[in-house]
Image 1 (cartoon, rainbow, N blue to C red):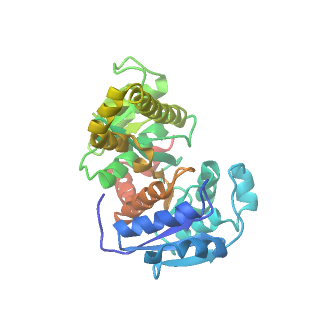
Image 2 (tube, rainbow, N blue to C red; image 1 turned 90 degrees about the vertical axis):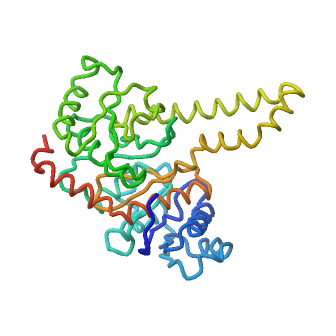
Image 3 (tube, rainbow, N blue to C red; image 1 turned 120 degrees about the vertical axis):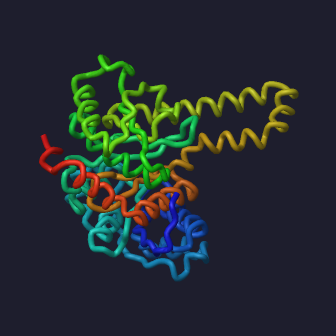
Length: 347
């Protein structure tokens, strides 16, 4: 990820996630070890936050607390969170970005509520109809960005074209690729395959080849091949693909563990291959790819996995830091302005 000497302030929803606030604050400490030019707005119950901060001496002089005891629970609907959560840690953390107190916000809390609150507080970028969840997935050649991962169950061709623009800007910053290759997820690679929506989206993306390096269609197995840097799809397909990939990785790990316990020779083989296996498992560890941006909002919002530990939360914080340092929303806005009018984006 790119580095910048500019100090970046991240608002942390300290009460969001299964392991809050301990894993959130421990994640902030770990992120600060890797990137010294960070400050944090720690939003949540002050007594609980201070108890955890005292375990991480390196956070001294790098944080400010915004106290609240209200939280958005994992069971709250987006509508309920908007109506009743205006004093919650999630809402106040997003509000800090709106007010210019923070460059970005990171939350491991309720995804639907985070999207709804962010849309209400921050609004969308001019020319973008719907925000999308954009995350990072491992591939045989490195990493790829995929969007949407669940925010929009149904998408128009215009939505998918907008996702291609935003995903390109995201990949350019996170992967440091000048012209990221964009693939459109489909049931086949041939031009005749796919729904009318997919075919129209493909045509629209091709019209802007000067701004989008369009690879073409990719199938499900193409997600991990690594031939593209950005995978564009609707939220329904994207979320299923993501969860299937995570489940498959878990299955492979469990099968390998069982295999190495079958005999004495297998256990000896494990000891000989332990270092290589550790490296392989690390590449499959979802914590190393944690941090999905809600792309398309007029502000930087990063979603951390609800079950994240300190390593996962640290990576989400560093994703937010990189996006803020490189001013991703300016990049998206510039592409929109240079490539076509705002009216052309809206059906």
